[in-house]
Structure formats: structure tokens, C-alpha cells
Length: 97
Image (tube, rainbow, N blue to C red; front, side, top):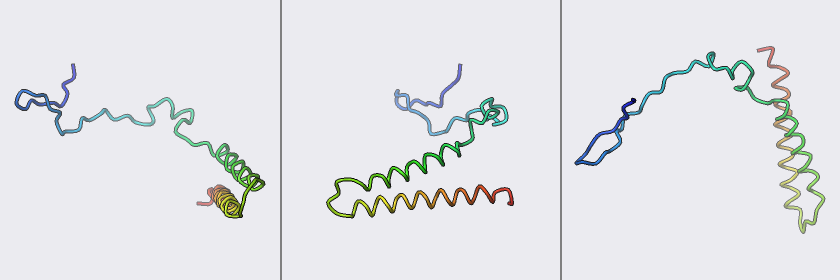
């Protein structure tokens, strides 16, 4: 049985301040690393980004009283498109580094 890091203080069990060490796990030993669980989803992320930008631009047509909402919608859509274009540029030049 494992001993926890506890001590007694005037008859009361008090947790200690020392941190218990967990056994180290090498990522190469984890079976999920073989099938890419630790990776990301770049294709789905790009698709979601383009869809989000398109939805923001479609939301311009609405019952707005003034153009403040339109400025925010266009600005956010432009920011998302800028990030997507920077990601596209980064992925195309990644092999050169």
C-alpha cells in the first residue's frame, strides 16, 4: 500500500507540503503517439476558420440600427482571414527551414 504524504499535528491529520512524484512516462512508450493523438487537426482548423469568416460576413445582413456591428463583423472576419493566410504562408515555407 502506498503511503501518502500526511502528518499528524495535535491529533489531526494534516497534508504535507511535499509534492508526490509520479513515474515518468516516455512519449515513445505511449501507444497514442503512434496514431497521432498528440498532433493537431490543421485541415479541420483551416476549414473552420474559413467557415467562421464567411459566417461573420453573412451576419452583416441583418436588422442593425447603426454600422458599429458591421465594423466589428468585418474586422473580425478580416483578422481571421489574415491569420489563415499567415498560416498558409507558414505551411508552404515550412519545408525550407
